[in-house]
Image (cartoon, rainbow, N blue to C red; front, side, top):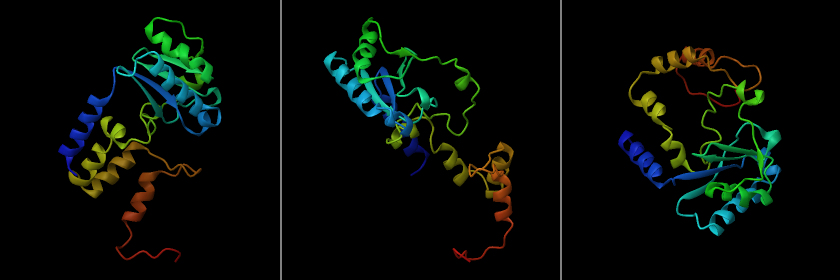
Length: 194
């Protein structure tokens, strides 16, 4: 696959998307709070309102406020709902046609959200984690393509070090330092467990 293929997949995915998207968090926290039933309710309400041509209900990864789930967001209306129940779903869809949503309005300015600066997870809550095309449409794999075809391994290492990226294993060990240590090792076959 080359850059032309990635761009074609991204374009096709963007063209497939509907005018209005209802994003339902289906990450573990929201699922354990009933998000599957909420998503089913949203899909049924869209069908009942005869909006299936213009409205897409999609699963998304974590929307970062698990304690207030299930979470639902509506684009481009910029509506955000929390603690959503299946009974709330018809009103969320009715709000698309001028009705009033009875679901709990979420606060995007809540300190829990505003004090976060997602970097690695910047698209989490926006794309369907089960559709690789959704990731590609947001520019996914472009940097991998760049790293594999346009710059040297040393330049990759320099970029990772400069980024300040840290491991997620609990110690926050700098990834660039870890990779630099491995890069200095003489090339030889690696044997697991030895």
